[in-house]
Length: 52
Image (cartoon, rainbow, N blue to C red; front, side, top):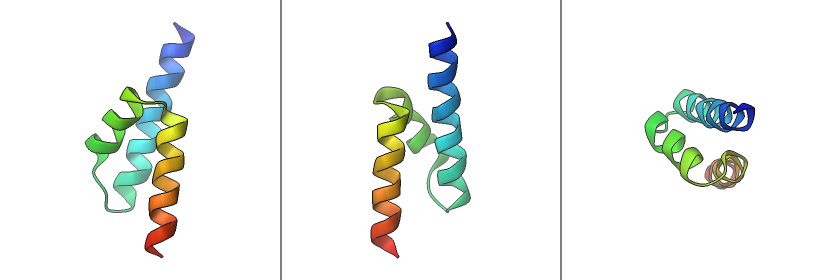
């Protein structure tokens, strides 16, 4: 149970970070739920780093 809460919490955090930077909250949140939130966060970081 704690692992599921951590998984959903990290996916929520990823969604909020993405939303704050003008990206889709729901898209990144669902991506974080489907794959690993840490891997989705790494993907987000790589995409955001490429834009600057």
